Structure formats: C-alpha cells, structure tokens
Length: 130
Image (cartoon, rainbow, N blue to C red; front, side, top):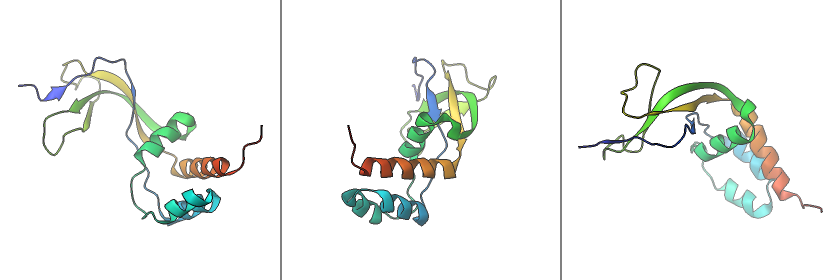
C-alpha cells in the first residue's frame, strides 16, 4: 500500500519559514491601508500564521531569505496527523523513491518582510496616477 506521493515535477522552491504577526504589524498595516482593508485588519487577532505572505515576500524579494537549504522533499499522503506534511532529507538520507531536490527556505528576515507588507499595503491604498 502506498502511503506517500512522490512528485515528478521539476525541483520547485518550497517555503518552510513563517512569520506570525503581532499587534505592531497589524497596527502599522491598518494605518496605511485603505479604509475597508484597515477595518478588516483591525478585527484580526495577532498570532495567526502568515504562510502565504511569507512565501510571496520571499518571491518578491529573495534578499529576505536568511537561511535556505537544498533538500530532497516529498509529501505525506497517509491519512493521519501528518497528512499533507512536507518531509525532507539531506543528501544521502533520502529513501530513494523518486524524491525531488528543492530549495527550502528555513529562515526569513522578519522585520524586512513586515516592512515590505506595510509598504505594499500602503502603496495599494494610494490612488494610482497614469
């Protein structure tokens, strides 16, 4: 019985680092956002993970990545507590079942990501002149 899925796609870039917003980030983004977005931000509780924002930030500004490794990766598809987890191995430790090498981001410049978010949210709130 197969309990793992091995991708046959080219080596994608996986994002493993994450950021959790605290009140100062929420306050800063609400301050520069357009009114309806600011109202939404003010209702958010601090502490939720910013996985998508972290991945987008690292893609938009690769200099935000402070630690990365090239690892063999696969996905846990066995239904249970680990379902959907990305598993990774260093060279020589992978099981050899077709795992792909991927660039895994392990740490990111949190202050830099927060500054990027505030800048981009503020920029989107300003009228765009053509």
